[in-house]
Image 1: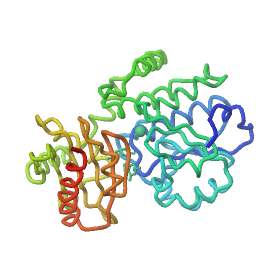
Image 2 (image 1 turned 180 degrees about the vertical axis):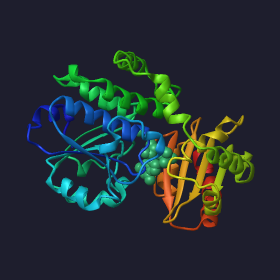
Image 3 (image 1 turned 90 degrees about the horizontal axis):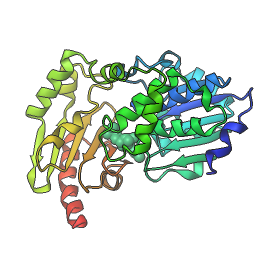
Image 4 (image 1 turned 180 degrees about the horizontal axis):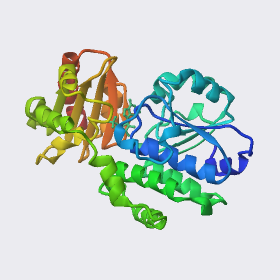
Length: 335
Ligand code: 5GP
Ligand code: MN
C-alpha cells in the first residue's frame, strides 16, 4: 500500500472514479464519501458513490445523497460501474469484508484501490494506495486533510463541508471523545467559513426519528438490558419480535448502545440485535476495556478501542451465553 500523496495528481480527467464505504453506512462513511464526491466534482472529476447496502433516513438530507447507488438495489448497474473504474476510493472501513456483497467485485476489479480509514489493522495487501490512521477522529477528517493537501484545496465548497462536518460530528460523539483534537476544532472553524448551519445538521441527524423509535428505546432499556456489575458491563439483547413490533428500520438502533454507559461504574456496553441473516454486535467502552480486541477475538469483528462491532450466525440465546462466558475469560486475561 503506497502513500496517497500522489493520488490526486495521478487522476486523469477521463478516469472513471468510484467511491465506496462500509455496509449500513453511518454519518462518517456517507459524509466522507459525499465530502470527497463534491470536492472531486468541483475539481472537474465525475465520480460514482456506491453504498453496499441501504442507509438510515437521518442521512437523507446530505447534499448528493440522491445520486448514491444502493448496491443491493442496483447490482447490475453498480457492477458495470465498478468493472469500468480506474480508481476506487474505499472509505471508513479496514477490510473488504465490510462491504458485504460488494467484496468480490471490489477485489476482482483492476482499478487502483485507495484506502482512507481510521480503523485498526487495515487489510493493506488489497489496496494500492492508502492511509490508515487510528489517531484520526473520523474518515471525514481524513478526507478534509486529503482535500487540503491537494493543489485544488480552494475548490472545497459548502456541500463538501456539510458532509464532512456531519461525519466528524458523529464519530466524535459531537466533539466529545478524546479523538477531538485541536486540529479537529481548527478544521471545524474552517468548515464554518462555508456558512454551514451546524445546528441544523445536528437536528437532521439526531432529532429526526419517529415516535416508535423512542418507545422502542424505552421498551428495550426496561426489559432487555442486563447489568453485569461484577464486570462493570451492560448487555442489551434485542429479539426480532421487538424490532418487528416497533417497526424498527435501518438507523433506528444507532446510538442505543451508548445509553448504559451513562450508568455510574459501567465501563463497557454491548448491544446484540437479531437481524435476519445474522446476529449483530456493537461494543462501546469508556475506560481501558479494549472493544476492538474483544470483538476481533470472539465475535468476528473489530473497530476501535472504545467502539467496535461484530457478528455471528448463532442464535440470540447462544450469543448471550457466549458473551457471558468470554467476558469472564477476557476480564481475567486483562488483569
Ligand atoms: P457499530 O457498532 O456502530 O456497528 O460499529 C462500531 C465501530 O466498529 C465502527 O467504527 C465500525 O466501523 C466498526 N465495526 C463494526 N462492525 C465491524 C466488523 O464487523 N469488523 C470491523 N473490522 N469493524 C467493525
Ligand atoms: Mn468512521
